[in-house]
Image 1 (cartoon, rainbow, N blue to C red):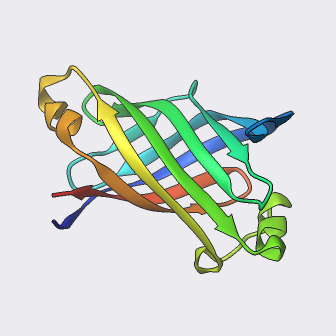
Image 2 (image 1 turned 60 degrees about the horizontal axis):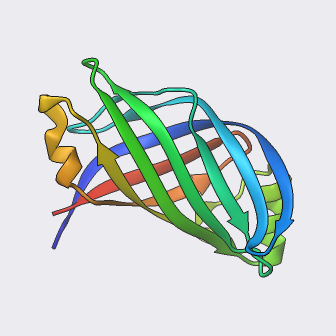
Length: 149
């Protein structure tokens, strides 16, 4: 198994909608308002309209669950889902929550990505699993995605 660079994603985020505590943890929804992605086989725009339906657990760990749509540079539409986890020390998580710039080496933020499309040029994505290392900024999540080959 190898990792093949797929694309670097920059996903622009709206303000956090805090739904409060549930039996699974603190539910939050962060709407996706746009962005871009660029890589050797995949580039284009992140379309507005998706979101991250995340849960913040009692220990501060965040379970990530995103769903949104990509439009490639040549007009194909691709549905993407990511699932993952972000955690770190209480001090680092507090800085992230305040929107401060925090070096990604100070916390753990990893994703796995799935894709779905009917466009013949990108059918290979339907059979591709990707993993990513991510970073959180005040209004953007950036991640480098790698196809598992």
